[in-house]
Structure formats: C-alpha cells, structure tokens
Length: 229
Length: 331
Figure (cartoon, rainbow over the protein chains, first blue to last red):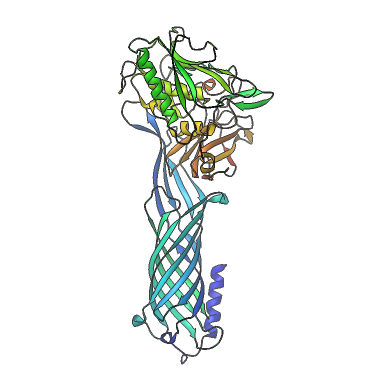
C-alpha cells in the first residue's frame, strides 16, 4: 500500500517536473528545507546461540544441556520520514525517523527429553531517530539532475517487544551513500524542488535487544520521494 | 528437606505452594499466605555437638558460609546473626532456631530437613530448625571429599527452606536399580535430590534460587527491574495441574521455573530478567511429585514436553501477555 503511494508520488512529481531547460541540480540553493518519505529493506542479523544449561553431576564444571537455542532478527521492510536543511550546496543536515518490524526468531533444538524442534518468534517494533550530515558530491554529478552523496549520522534506538510491554533503548550510528535525482527545481514558488532518492546505509546498533554488549551492524537500502520548499 | 535418593516430604502438614514462585504457604481462613520471616536479622544457633570428622566449630563455620551465600544475593533483603552454640536440639519448638546434627538412622534417605514454627494466621515464621543426619559422613573440606557429603552445599539448600522456599524441579534424574533416583543435572540448589558425595556445586546459588528468594524478600528495585510471566497449560482445553514450566532467557542464559498450581493449569513465574523467554513445559517426572507439591494436589504427568509457540516477553516491572501452552498427551 505504502509502496504504491510512493510510486504514485513519483509519477505526479514527474508530471510536474519542469522542462529540460529549467534549473539543474547544480543550481539548487542553500537554506532550503526538504521533506522526504520512503521505504526500503533492513537486513536481518544473527543474535547468537544460547544453551539452556543445567549443572552436570560431576566434580568438574561441566554442564548438561537441556536444550539449545539460536536466535536472529529477521529481514524486514522499513519506512522512513526525513526533514533536511541545506546548510550550503555541499552540506545538508537531516533528521530521520525510521521504523521497521523485524521478528525475533529463536530456533529451539536438541531437547534433552526429545521434544520436537521448533522455531518460535515475537514481533518487534524498531525505531531509529537519528540525525545525519550529508555531503553532496557535485563533482561526481551525473548529467544535470543526478547527484551522489555520502552520509554519516547517529541517534536513538528504540525497540518495543511484542505486546509493547517492554522497551529497550540504545544508540544507532550510520554511514552510507546514495544519489538524489531532481525531477524539478525552481527558484520561486512554494514547492521549489522535488525528486527521488536512493541510498544504502550500514547501521551500527549499540544497546537495545542483544545477547552481548557488542555493536551489531545492519544493512539498509531504501528509496524515497522528496519535496523541497 | 534434602533427600539423599528418594522423596519424603516433611513440611506438607502445613504447606501448599502459592500461586506464584514455589514458596511455602499456609492456609489462613481459605486464604493462602506465604511463609516468611517478618524481620531481619534472622538469629540462629548452632548445636554444640559435631559429628564424625566435623567439630562443632567446623559445623558453625560451614553454616555461616551457607548463610553468607544467601545474604550475598543483591536483590534480596536478608541478614542473619549467629546467636551462639546451644545444647538445644533442632525441632524443640523452643522459640530459637537451631541448626545441628542428629543421628536418624531410620531416615536412611534423608540428609537433612527443615522444620518451622509459624503463625498460621499471618504466615510469619517464628522459628525454623535444621537437622543434618549424622548417619551419613560429612565434610567441610574446601574442595569437598569424594567419600562424604558436603555440609555447606546441603546447608545452603536447607537454609533456602528456612527462608520459605520450596523445592525446584529444575533438574534431570534417572531411575537406578532399586527404584531410587540419581541426579543427572540440576539447575537449582533447591532441587530436592543431592548431587551426591564429594560434589560442592550447591554452594553456589543459581538464577532460579535467586529469583525465588528475591521474590519473597525483595530488595530495593527488584520488583520494578524484573518481570512476571503468567499463563495456563492446557490439554484439549482443560487445565493441566502440576506441570513444570521453565522460562529460559536466551539473552542471559538464565533458567527460572515454576509450576501450574491450580486445576485450571495456571502458573506464574516472577523475578525474570526483562526480555523474551522460551517457555518449556514438562511433566513433573524427575522426582516424586510430593517432593515439590502438596501430596493432596493433583499432578498430571501424562503429556509430552512442549515449547510455547511464541517467545514470551517479560516486561520490566510488570506482567507480560498471558501465555497459553497447549500440550499433547503422551502417545
């Protein structure tokens, strides 16, 4: 449903795009605000293995496994909303809210009393609220409308477990890059720019739901539609 | 009560499990009240007689270490005070809590036992005595003695009873020739059957023990920092009483367990680290059911080990969503 809306948005923006003789990406101005909405995919991640151990009846420190588990976070669609402000033509500050709902999946195997192996799960709602600095690479511009960028950012991680009775918090850091394609750019009017954006980022998560204190990386790819004012 | 090999219940006269963690309770006008000490420190006395290979001062030192183990639980408000040596016997109902050896050759499967004097209206413990059966050989050696039972390990277990804890079923056993049981593994000091001679592992409390005692004597923010899971175990829509319900937190590796304690198959496990848990339900078949529950309580063991089909999330400071585990009958 949301993807359909995004596609519809692109068609409308393409329809309102100015003639080829209008301004190019190189003509964009600083001090402008853009809003952006999009969708994408967040990669899964391994959480780790964990055995349910009892103490074995021996003098040594040996354990006896009651059952074994292996857990991961599933790959999940993501939805994002951004607001950005161009400090200069090269540097853009951006705030974003990204939501995804991966499953926490745990495979239970090797039960000591022969119970059937199962994979059980819960749905988690995950939010990244972060800020980024985008560096527009005009020198690598492709044609008149397509400008690559790189981005780094950091912010707040919030995870709500199923039933929304338990919240875990942490930090999220990201680095990546992408391209922006201006369908429309003009000096006057309420809507002064519109276009498409595609990007790939690596997110580094600290805290939140994990089996240890180590940071975990997740890969995200996304596409979006932006409108500038 | 700590049994050597088989089940003998010593406290069933006035106890039945609460609808919570397995704590001893007393029925007061149809209301179940948990047995617990009303105030700290708990003052205890050591009997002034030792046993073969264990002097009275060795005994007192081992008991002090065992009390210190419980007192060190950071999430429980516990303190103990050694009152001195006494010539009084355990189980004298004299208002003082006495720990000591007694020779009970007729109790050839009982390493030790704990008794109480309680206020049956409030559930307050007035006195609790522990005896260790000097029919057996005991050791207080730091590393244990392969020919003797470790006094400190058994004392840690019995002091758990003294505090109001019942038995945990977190363990696996096998039946050996003669019909007795041998422990293969255990996940709680409060498991009712001893590891055996020479093993000192029960000197160290396990997460199940810590959750149980902390639920009974919570310190500071224990309740606001841990979660509770409640639910039912059913078979064909009917409650399964006496099922053993284990909650495993894959993130912490901790096992904490409880029982279905009503005919409707209801259970509650408190003191859980917040987060998702694997729920495993098994029949109570690693010991005589009366080792764990009141002999009058129905116990259904005719079902297969079953995992709940969802991860159950224990919230911080609250109760998770209701868990319903549907088990299948044994083939």
